[in-house]
Amino acid sequence: MIQFFRKIRQSLLSEGKTGRYFKYAIGEIVLVVIGILIALQINNWNEEHKINKIRTLKLSQIESDLRADVVALEEGILVKEQEIATLKNYRDRLSQSNASIDTLDKIVNTEFLGRIRIGFSGFNNITYISMIQSGELGILSDDLVKDLSILNIRQQNSDNNYNLHKEMYLKKGQSFNANYPVKRRTDIIGDGPLSDYLREHREDKNFIVNFNEVFIAKRLMYSQNLSHHKKILELTKAILKNHFAE
Image (cartoon, rainbow, N blue to C red):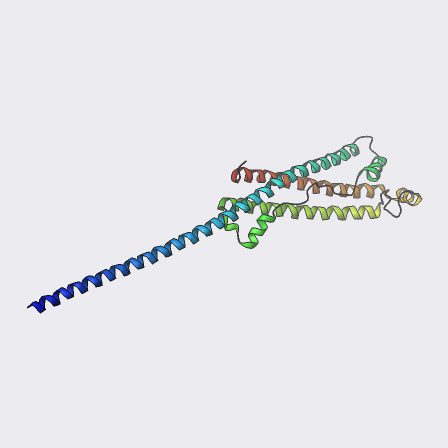
């Protein structure tokens, strides 16, 4: 009988020891899981911190690009308005009742310049383009990405429109200069007897018609570019107001 109770007691002690080991093992597993979760959380936090740093940097660069565009667009708009005002002055003078072929000759030879003054060197969209290429646009808000996309499309349309009208104007100008050399030192004929001969033997009607084509092409180039840039300036300012602190 004594042996029987000893066996029961030994069995209970053994079961108690196994229970303690089991609880210890469960505790170890729980600690490992908690450690893994903490490590994942720290990794996620580090990744989010990294993304936030990149986002802050990119937002700062985009804002800087947009503000630079505002300044450049405003300066360019003034230049184009001045050029359009000059062209209007030519038109007003040539539309007067006392206007003559000499009036046009004076404008062509001493005032009307073939050079182009736009006052704008290009849009500052390098940050936006680089983010498209690197796939980083996803770190920005959907609203900002949408607005920047619309802005970029309008910028491209503006550039394409300007290049088209610039090419048209240059072709008209080159054709006019080839047929009616202007008194300039850079021309082989320049100012002299040959220049006088060309002027005396030209057909004034064609001279007027061809210059009118050059004039229209130049005015259209400026007016189209001016219209595009005013709309882009308005949109650029709206993006700065809606997405960036003043």
